[in-house]
Amino acid sequence: MDRDKIIDKICKCMRLSESCNPNEAAMAIRQARSMMKKYGISESQVLTSGVTEATVDSGIDYKPPFWVLALANIVGQAFGCRPFLTRKEGANRHFRFIGVGHYPQVCSYTFEVLHRRLRRARKDFVWELEVETKKEKTRRGDVFAQAWLFRIAQLVAEFSSTPEAMQAVDEYVKQNYGEAADLNTKPKGMENPDYEDILSGMRAANEVDLHRPVSEQKRYHLAK
Figure (cartoon, rainbow, N blue to C red):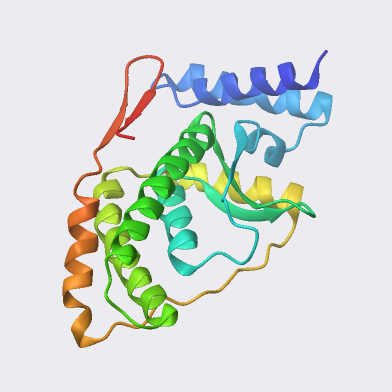
């Protein structure tokens, strides 16, 4: 019998084990354990069976700035996905979102749209700055982006993942990728004159509207 079909049957038994009927729950557990023993299926294989991946181009061929990585983390946490930054030689870096079910696809789409909006808003903001040095324009643009992210983080706070889902993702990552290194970047330091830049970033983020998935198809709506 196909291994995926066996794992699917085991998962169904595990769901039945949560039944309020003690006899039905006990029987489901025994059946699940019997199939696992018969076909050599481990608990970790069952745990990670629903984990999927989705990738999205970061649009950057070098180490991304703090605000890009922060956006990936915010979106990942909102939908119970772990973001990883990967790169193939000669190509842009990609974010790989790993999560349960359809959420990695939702996550990659959300990141793509929000990243495009933030990049455009930051570019428009920097363009209007009357600053002499490119370094200072970059710094103030990053402060603007960080304020934008602060407001977005508040919007996505209503989305939450379950500890069980994150446990499955962690086990999947361990099995398929081993230990991953953290890419550490720091936010741009803020100065007293940056107050208006921060307000501008937060106001720009107010134009973004997020909606929780609805309908049986679990569609996700995001203003582009």
